[in-house]
Image (tube, rainbow, N blue to C red; front, side, top):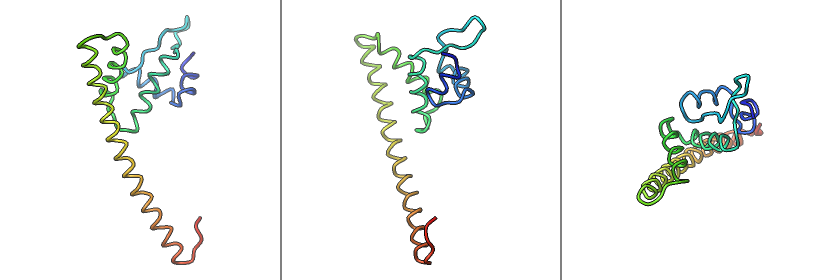
Length: 128
């Protein structure tokens, strides 16, 4: 599929996909005769991984590293596989920690909204 369809299916802008391509996170599987980028389902899977890492604050280098780990795990054996699994576990731990921090931020924000709602109610103004 071309970049527009890939962008729509993954929920990213064309500009973002091009940025990720320039950063080395995604490489289109092929080019059409006219030079258009062509993406496959595995390419979309990679974009989905990057999209889910972004709100957790992972850097482009970290995203690239995780994608490298995920790619290598498919064929790794022995000590290499163990090392890759250790690196994957580190990413899992980091993601879990960042999710917890976001939950804390959300709880704080919800508490603030509740305080404002209470102030509105205190002054007999309906919520809007």
